[in-house]
Amino acid sequence: MRAALALFALLGAACAAQGAEPVDSNEEIAATAEAAHQLKKEVNFVVLPVPRADPTLGAGLVLSAIALYNPTGGGRPWITGVGGLATDNKSRALAVFQKAYLMQDKLRLTAAVSDFDIRMKFFGIGEAAGTREESIPIRQQGQAVLVRSLFQVAANVYAGPTLRYIALQTSTQGTLAGVSIPAGELDLVTSGLGLMLEVDTRDNEQNPQRGSYATLDANFPRQGFGSDRNYEQYRLRFNRYQPL
Image (cartoon, rainbow, N blue to C red; front, side, top):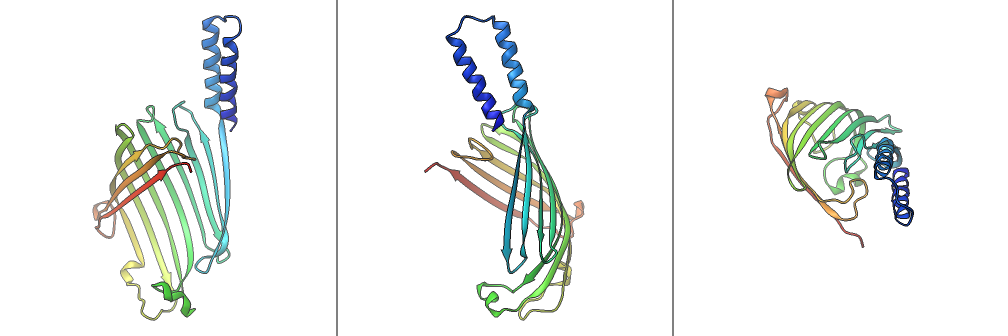
């Protein structure tokens, strides 16, 4: 918000100067450069607490804190953030992420690291499972890493590789009628390279009002990258933004 106000002030000063006496062009250029430098130095912080409560995880809080800044003076701000989860059943999770725009937004970098210890009540499979009021405790502990590089290949189109790593340890107590978890699924590592295609015409990343955002994400975990299983995963997403 302060960056926007500073920009409005700069534009207002420029408009007022049109009706004033001429000013040396070198002074105008120096003043504009200084104002742009100050805008680049601005750092805006956003903190978002979200209470949550459900039978699976219990009651708790999801807390996110992000910093938005523009060290390169490009069209989109960089984002550094941290997020956490804590509930009354001792579940917890912590994630740190970074998003950067380089080479005048021709290169988009994303990195994230998380550590989690989630304790859930598993009621079974299907909509009617919860009505039986029977559940077993499941605990999932692990770490996850994501690194992605997207290069601009056409106007508003980006593509590039993704590296994912997830290490998961699962433990259960008791059994639930009709449900069994194979032993090979309790401790599992998935790791491998993937590809992502992104089409982004949003007018603003944090608060879009117009445009669209679509991604095609292909993931290929392989044993050569330390994965316990070889498989393929494809995900297609599309969002359209239009003011009402």
